Image 1 (spheres, rainbow, N blue to C red):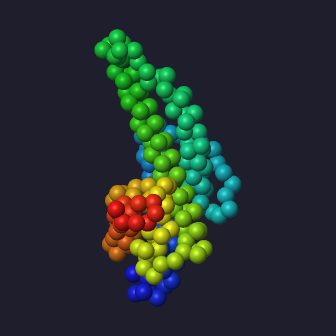
Image 2: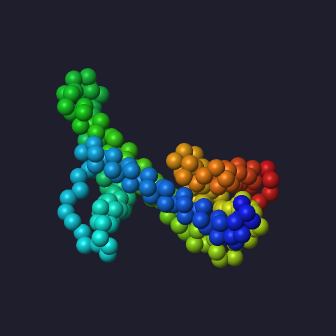
Image 3: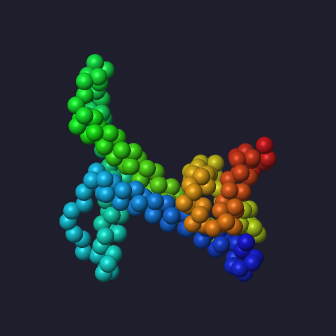
Amino acid sequence: MADDHEVPTWLYCQDILLSIKEELIAEALDTLNNEIAEHRIDIQGSMVTAQEGSEDIEKKMFVIENLRHKADEIRDQYKSYLRIPEHEKTNLDPDLVGRLESMKKFLLAVTQITMLMDYSEVFDEWARDMGHGAKGSKPIDLLISTMDHGQRCEALEFASKRHKVMAYLGEQDAEIVRDAVATHERTDSSGKSI
């Protein structure tokens, strides 16, 4: 807990939120790397970067942001390819079936990357807000008091179900996150227990 480390509670919570954000971004990068390894995405070209050795990560983050912002357009483009009339489904060429399955996996990856990055932004904003008037003597109280019933609640619940995120946080911080989600689920929007 924050008292054990003599760190202000808001700063301790901010660290938890930023750790979750970083792990979600790492998961998005892992998803992209998998798509590259499976040859469903090909990255070509080079970039001028601020630091040596960061070109690969910057390039991948650029691709992730492009996939994220064009996700709806990508889904619309592939939709017509994935629609096969019922009467044609029985005699499909095995190569076509393979390409269709590859397209489906690519679209699932785009959706996953988009979701991970959207949630990472929620945690980034929440971490920034944590230091601005957040009150609570215990980390769980502070997380609950700054959580809403919308995006933050949804994002924290999502993160609490991600094994990699919880393992990254460590047992104590993961327990704080799970307790905050459970406590928040037992309250209504006015803060009263249900």
